[in-house]
Length: 158
Image (tube, rainbow, N blue to C red):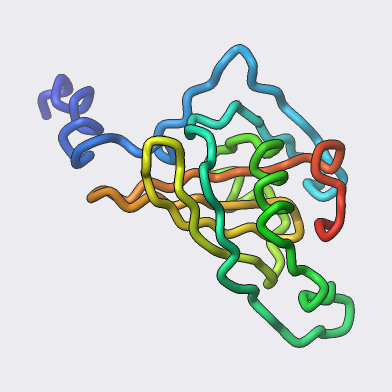
């Protein structure tokens, strides 16, 4: 096999603009953090590449029945101001960390937002301080976020 094609393969197989979820740049301003929720793993928090949020709407909350030993999802109902505050403090993380390191819970709040410049996006945030922003502009772009307890330990986050 001609190995020079392997170098070009990521660009050949990626339609249009490469999603930042696939290619998260590591900046000098990125920091590694360790929280008790991560066992022994650390995650890297980087500045958000997204423009400022112009408008944000909360459209719903996932509800679930509380099983023994699980948190009560019915107490997680952030308003638009709380979600805006969360995203002002949250930092981008890799999709790998979002899927495999963070503690996921069956609760979330979700809605839509308009970013500066008019781009529309959907968002979802969990009480464990993990979030996702999805921009659908032809190629679906996903951005993963986390906010440390030090920055986002305010209610209703756990």
